[in-house]
Length: 94
Image 1 (cartoon, one colour):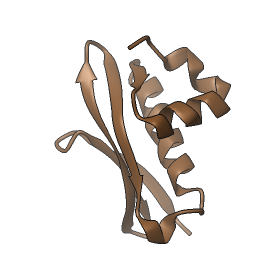
Image 2 (tube, rainbow, N blue to C red):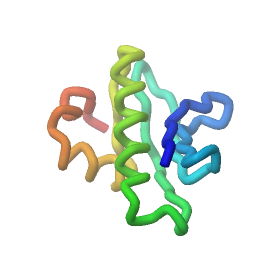
Image 3 (cartoon, helix red, strand yellow):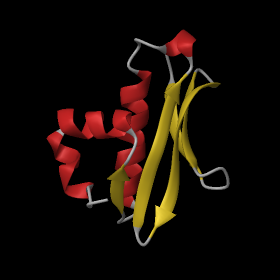
C-alpha cells in the first residue's frame, strides 16, 4: 500500500492518497507563522488502517520543514500530538 501526504495550499488542506486514491484530508488556515489545523477526515473505507496517523505525521513534518508552528484546534491532530511528544515543540497556544 503506497501512501503519500501532500500540501494543497490552494484548498488549505493536507491530503493523503493511498495507491493514488484520495483517502483523507486535514483542513487548515494560516495565522502569523502557524498552521491552524481545524478539521481532519479519513474516508470510511480507509478507517482503522493508520491513514489518519500517517496524514497527521506527514502534515506535521511539513510544518516543521517549513519552519512554522502548529495550532491543533482539530481534536484528531491534538490527540496525535499528545501521543507523539516529538511534535509538541511545534505547538503554540491558541
